[in-house]
Length: 193
Ligand SMILES: C[S@@+](CC[C@H](N)C(=O)[O-])C[C@H]1O[C@@H](n2cnc3c(N)ncnc32)[C@H](O)[C@@H]1O
Image (cartoon, rainbow, N blue to C red; front, side, top):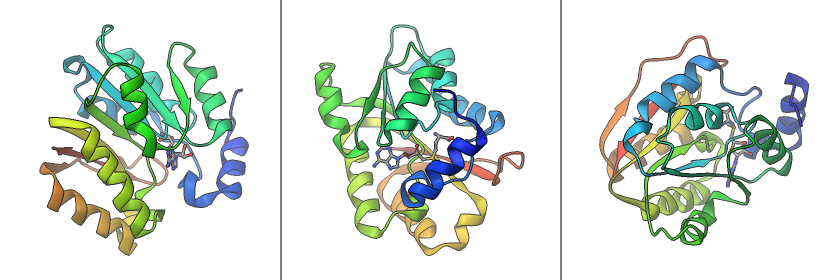
């Protein structure tokens, strides 16, 4: 299924709290997220919330060909869109809460890198805590979480709460420059377990 701007907005209107944005990330943000992940160095990478697959496509281009990669997406129409854009990718239709189950299915207990697009700023506290604990649990020591935030969302208490969680729980939390060309402008966090 090819997704136009209207199709994406439709998903947002259906479920704003899960979709978290009106448009997919642009090329600039996709490049920055996937460069920050240093994908040529990782053996296992998991993407959470691929949406229409803009990051997925870059992950496939940049990862080591031997590396294990799969994505987990809760919205079935986004799953279809990512499968259409990236036929070589393994996409599971499920919640990120079940990441460990899919790692086990591939014979792994942990992963080196999580690339997350989960909309932290619209999640309530319980959901933020539950999902960050899942990510912490599945990352190996020294493993990295790469995620992004819209600059404007830093006005929202839950986005600031998420930043505090990262700073308190992870080490070497680094915030990137702002990608002004994205709508809305966004920056990337890299956090190490
Ligand atoms: C802000 S969109 C980002 C989509 C895409 N990665 C991009 O950057 O354009 C957030 C995505 O996370 C997905 N999502 C939200 N909650 C989720 C969950 N609990 N498990 C898996 N995916 C989830 C949404 O369906 C949506 O595709």
